[in-house]
Amino acid sequence: MYSVTIDKVVHRFDDLKTLLAKASTPKSGDDLAQIGACSAFERAVAQVALSEVPLGAFLEDPVIPYEEDAVSRLIMDTHDAGAFAPIASLTVGEFRDWLLSEHTTGNVLAELAPGLTPEMAAAVSKLMRVQDLVHVASKIRVVTRFRTTVGLEKTLCTRLQPNHPTDDPAGIVASIFDGLMYGSGDACIGINPATDSVSSAIRLLELLDRLREEYKIPTQSCVLTHITNTIEAIGKGAPVDLVFQSIGGTEAVNRSFGVTLDILEQGYEAGLSLHRGTVGENLMYFETGQGSALSAGAHHGVDQQTVEARAYAVARKFNPFLVNSVVGFIGPEYLYDEKQIVRAGLEDHFCGKLLGLPMGMDVCYTNHAEADQDSMDTLLTLLGVAGCNFIMGVPGADDIMLNYQSTSFHDALYIRRQLGYTPAPEFLAWLELAGIVREGTLQSAAPASLRIPNKEQFNELPS
Image 1 (cartoon, rainbow, N blue to C red):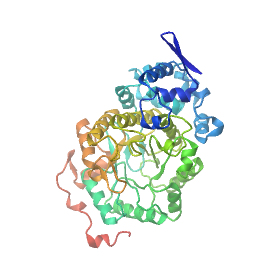
Image 2: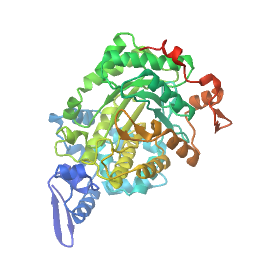
Image 3: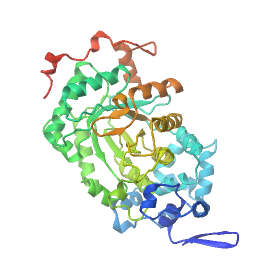
Image 4: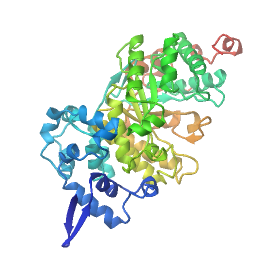
């Protein structure tokens, strides 16, 4: 039982799960689940009560019992008591103040990360304003390496996303070259396949690898197929760089995705066995998003932001190269409008970084949400200031296969120019060598060496 007295009235909350839900900023998903605060007053009271909770309580009162959930067991079994010790005596409110202190540097936060549980990160985020989420996240750099180095200070990387509704090689390659001309693709070139099968994945992987090798592009490819397909593709000799999987914050939601921690481990080991990285061996790529557990009926009554943070405990077990929240993809049933999407994106980025993850963001919304591209400009700019590792690069910001709105190659140019950011150093060197960039300036015309393959050359590509 947790309580707070305001104007001589005692307000009680049965457990941490209830308190966290009531203290959350408004989310349509929590309203749908009937667990959010019923009024602004109840939310404020819950936030006051939450501020007084000792951080140690999150180790004693798990939101989902240890015996009932594999993710809970992972969180508890991997908690680093030594890393937690410097803040063990703090309450959630005191932890917020400590995070905002000038003496709490990025190096200090990096050492702290193994000592934090996702619930601690979620709890403190619920007490923070937008500027707090941006400021603290901006202190933290989480650097990962495969063929490029992602997460360095003053860099912003992009996943070039050349999806096509029929997986047509000509359409995919055209989108790839379009993105390359704008300096996109240093986080990865990643395709969501229209047909989720092993044979389709192998065909696309071979296409990407052929282009990467032919043009000597220092990046990594990924076909975002199910991890079991990727494991089978590796067994068949496919050129797999990054191993992808969507994950969530409970055992039940992960089972709805068709995965367990053991299957993720198998995928990780299979990827490592190929030794395809040149500057590092981070190779897992995870996508998450608020609302996925609720949509699968797998949230255990936990608010969607806290469940999302728990997914980051799954991700960090496997030393990922990339992690991103597809923040507005699930729809307005879970994040209704611009304000909720922007807030959720900043919460996810903050919690992921605080827990030691290389966080990026798919700054996106569905066409039936109360949001537009101006909304995405707002979130993109805030994430840029917050030090986001990577964003999506989608032709025209409109994914014609997944039918949602994201960020374009031009959006990545905007935020890099506005904040003085560059692509990953290995990729930037290639852009200069290829003549796409000269003396730091993007050229207006494509160099002859990077013309899109003609029809005869397409016939030689995997089909």
